Image: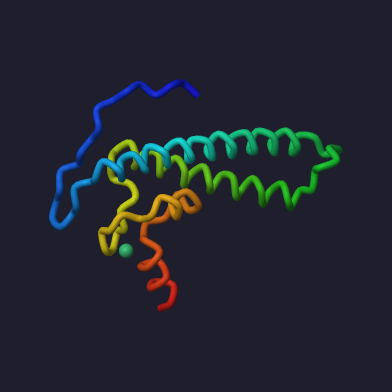
Length: 127
Ligand SMILES: [Zn+2]
């Protein structure tokens, strides 16, 4: 990974009801970006390994169903991570779509595709 060039902090303009992002939140998001980039690299490697296994039917680890499931899971994760990183770049990541609060960083690290905060998420699955 190349060292990130220092860049000016971005302070997205507050739209209707949107809070201006605090400096500490921005720092958290910078850390999260590194976590997501690592996850992205890991899934990328995983996919490459799976593709190799798939190309060798005699490979001891070749179990077609498992390989297919792992491949699908990694592809999904890569999609989620790519979208998350793109949104991070655009400064519109990590805000709950429903209540507009900041989604906790720890939560996002485990679910990079999360669009709702844990509270709204729980509320929507309860229905
Ligand atoms: Zn919410």
